[in-house]
Length: 512
Image 1 (cartoon, helix red, strand yellow):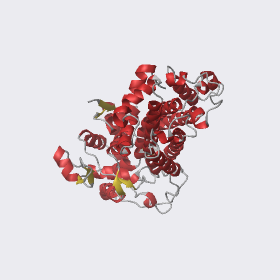
Image 2 (tube, helix red, strand yellow):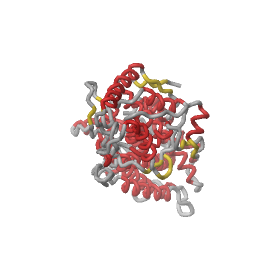
Image 3 (cartoon, one colour):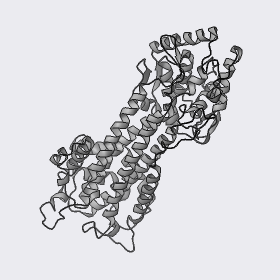
Image 4 (tube, helix red, strand yellow):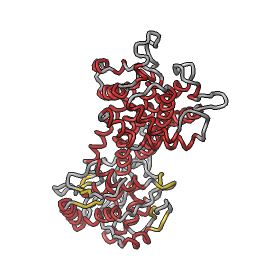
């Protein structure tokens, strides 16, 4: 159990992961409480003076010019949440909703939204009592931020709407609050708008995706190296001097990983000086670091964008320290949408080149004397033939998902919101691409391990030995066909988890 403190400077990506995927408790730094109280006094002053300010004394969106009487402004905020909680579809995963709530509390705590501290505290209470709102997957255009998803979260604060049950069922929010001893809150002027006008869903998904992609891109180097080793490929294209002359940092890091992974291998030693050995390996082998490295550089860019957003106040209007309340466009999700689409493209290609290596490993005409489909008794047995079919289908899906969502826009709210980012859709499909990449790399891991087993009695590299040990108990030795789906699922768990990477790093040192 750890504690994440929301400070005046915000929170870190690690904090988001600790709350979204872990059991970390959340607390507000007293300085953030003071900042919120100060900004609230400015909103209260505007209320008292009767000045027209968007979302405080007016309607929303296309109704921005509609004046709302003082006695109805609290009603306005509640009506806003109810009407905007209009999503449909399956619920978003618990980790996404928890990240979104934490990030909205973070933005409010920066003291530029004009809300009372109790509003941010109410979000923190939901997190600490593990009350997760039911947030439907469809509803956000990434326009004024993630309006509908955040409204579904805010509705629970009012004791209305739905929450996600332990088994994924939909439960009544009022009853869920009562069970954990929480009471609904009443919103004051500006507070409903401040609860929903943010990019927190997009950002939460992007931060989770960055963490996952960082691991998967490292494991892509592992599976590439194992496949190259099993196919009797050359390690020479990964020499550091060859990448120093094209100084893309991701490429250099990936090449260095692959080169180290291929050392101390009797399989590699067996053909290193063979004059009959191919002069050049196929692109899917030789160009592995160029593709995976470009993906790493893309990830670095995306991480920079997410880091900036994590320091940002995303709301509209915002309350400035000098007392001004100004409308902004900072809720627009274009920066995050572009970044998510860019990373989806990169991840799709990491998976595509992995599938090409799998196909080569299985093809008796190209795999350098391994049996067809990696079956010792091909014909009666099909080996990993259909595993490659599955990989090919996933590659095709990832190519469809790599089409950018952020180039689309549908105007809404009576043409007030006449350009939208589709950033929620971009981030959501990025998560699917990364989940698919996990499956693709798992197929390559399984095929590479089978290939290395078939090179016996030659001993593979330390990485190869670790992979064979990790999968040997799952896949067994090469032999008659088995029910393959459970083996592939288990390979996914090995690939996605930390144990195999840790075992390899104990032998060769940290991977980049």
